[in-house]
Every structure is written in structure tokens, then in C-alpha cells.
Picture 1 (cartoon, rainbow, N blue to C red):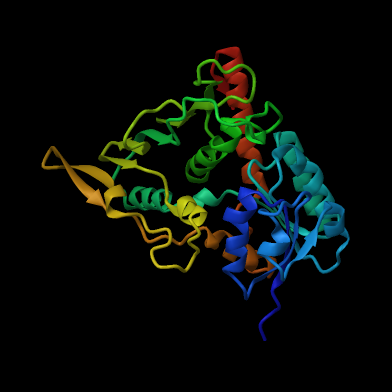
Picture 2: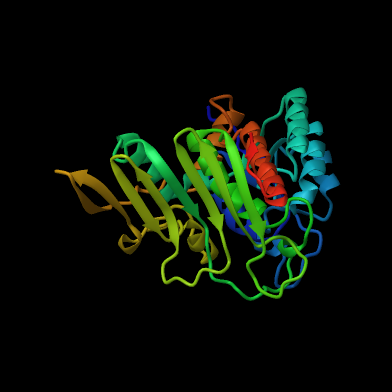
Length: 357
């Protein structure tokens, strides 16, 4: 007999909840039920209770902690609230999924890991870009040995947005804010997932936009030094290109270049859902280029992006973990280590020197 779905409570009703979590929860009805949503200030054109009438609607997170029917709490609020909410949810006997960045500091991350272990509940961080089709394609290429020993690895999330955007919480200079915590967590997590902790870190963190005073840094370049390999992690807002570079990886046997971001975010924002035709499928015009050496000469070919497993895989693995059938999709220890790298990059940028890990 199949077990009943786990009741999910989502804290927050911004883009993260609407685009990256609720559609994935709804995509797995045998595993999860959207039980309720915390939205403190609904508006006529932005009301969770209207969008999801079958789910409970709360105004306070305390109501979630007290509800014995809640199995899983998904935290999508701003970063500086994550620690208190994670801790309270775990101590209330709930399993927790928390958006990236996990928390603003590695110290807080370590404390929450201890709270989770003591509570006996699962804690996982939403690093969904481990399931980007382009990243999985690159991991396949590396596993095939087509690149040989990698000497340089560039990973980019550049955009051309030189004008200061309208004010949002992301632009506020607060713990866990800024480009390196927003986009850098994704890029660094992929590198950590593939290669582990680097030996040294060099960071350049600041504002590329002109005339901007104060606020969180909008750009970063971080060098991760591994034995025999240098990784460049870069996200800038001044990059006037028709096609933005995503990956450029160079090894002793070949190189791989890929432009354009994974399409799942755009698909979800446009209203497409997992299971829809072509959801997450990379268009042929976005395929990467693999160059290998044949008969002593470079030979370039188009490399087909792998079929997407999609971000649903994160929640599918989490459901298995809840049933005792495997690990959580992203261990909190991994997210803590990513925060350690970010902290080193920030200190390196401040000091103007490379730091040992």
C-alpha cells in the first residue's frame, strides 16, 4: 500500500515559491500535498488563497509550527530570516527545505546542522542548478574523458544590466545579500559538487554599475585554486553580448564551450510546467561545442545537451529521503562548505590577497 503524500507548508509567496517550489511540489501528487502557504500581506492581484484555494492560508509562521499536520516546511523568505525559521521548524518536528543561500554564515549553518541532527528531522538546501541540463551535459563530457585533465574551468552567469534596478530586498546591503550569495551560491555549488573544496580562494567582489552608492555588491569574480586546475566563477551585470558565455572548460585532450543559461527558469516563469511538451529542453541553437584533438589537429563538433531530468528531481529525491530510501538531494554540510568559500572570497576581496582554505 502506498504511503500518503507528505503535507507541505510553504513560507513566503514571492517568485521563489511561485516559480521554483510550488510547481515542483504539485508535479509529484503521490509524494506531496500543498497543504498551506504563509503570505503575510496578500494583495488583490497577488493572493495565495485565490491561486491555491485548496491549501490553507496563514499570515504567521507560528501557525505552521503549531500545525501537527505539517510534515515539511519550505522556507522561501529573505536570507536573514532563514536561521530562525529553520531552527523553529526543526524544533517543532518538521522536515525543512530552505532556499539558497542556506543562511548568511557558515557558523549559523553548522548550528542548524546540529539542530537537525538533534531533532531527527531532515534538512536540505535548494541548490536546484545541480539539475540544470547544461551542467549535467558537462558532467557527462567529463565522465567520458573527452577533455582529459582539466586545466581551466570558467563558469559564468553574466547579464547586461548596467542601470540600477528598481529597489527590491535583493539590493539591500544585509547579511546573505548580493550577487555572490544570489548567483554565486549556484555557481560555486556546482564546482563544489564536481570537485570538492578548493585549496585557495581569490575573490573580487563589488559593483560594476556606475553611480551606484551603497547596497549589496552586484558582481563578483572568484578564483578557486585546485591542484592543477583553476576555476573562475563569474557573475557580472556589464556584459553586452548577443550570447552570454555559460561554460568554457579546457583540458589536455579537448575543450567545451556553452552559451546561454538552462531554460527551466524561463519555462517556469512563462507558465510552462514539468511534464509539458519540451519543458526544460535546450534548443539546438543553444547546444555546446566540443573541441577534441584528432590526428594532431583540433576538431570541433556540436554536443547535444542531455535530456533534462528537470528540477522535479530535487523533490523526487527528497521524497525518497523522507521515506528512508536515500540521502537528501543536497546535504546541508555541502551548503555550509559553499558558504565557507563565499566567506573566504569576501575576505580575500577585502584584503586584496589569496587565502588558503
